[in-house]
Image (cartoon, rainbow, N blue to C red):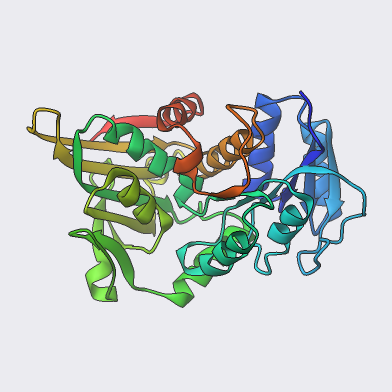
Length: 333
């Protein structure tokens, strides 16, 4: 396997970064990896456990990321918020793929602008969807059963003890500070909703009800535009998960409801839960790893420069297969 350099994982010693690196190492044992973090000892620990990986310190406030000149990288992966977009610019300057995870709908304008200004510089994958896009891909795989999709409703319950490490918690705090309003597609129109209207109740697989709200997240736009569904919403709640209530530790549940019609025009609906007993970390790392794999041509053709979302690059049915391999359960509601 010929590579121009290693995959540079910014925040590689954190939860999302280290889990993503572990998946890439499992799938592609010869793929060079560079674990980049502010704490060199932590980065070295992750790199040593992976084997065949290097550790470096990184400074996201610098254009060169504080990295030695002359090192080659195959891709740059921001597993934490690239607030100054120096990771993106570094990838563009070196003509290598870039993946982002933590921009969120409220932060994407600078990233879109930077990618649009230099469209030929590098392929850019914006994976700031829930769990890096795997929920959207699952919904699209199930939408393949429909001739017409009218409504998509998604409700994700995240365990209060599974919100991620410091970077993940900072993302949640930042998004909550910016807006408490909802966002959805209603009758074909994308629109913001007031905080009161955004509040919903989500139902766990064990029957427990959790208070949540519809949120501004890229899954809404991706699903609406990919399927043509005029009604799409994504609701989110943080609370005690069914796994924690059983005493098995934090789990994650995502209910996906699809409504529409089959090829004969008869009403059709799908109501299923996507459940992982180990919480959201395996889902997020899987989405990131699949995106990196695709960008580098390790599964399918290498991706040319451009701006992409997960559903533009990844095959939904393949994503569901990978989710099942990772221990994800799919349960009819």
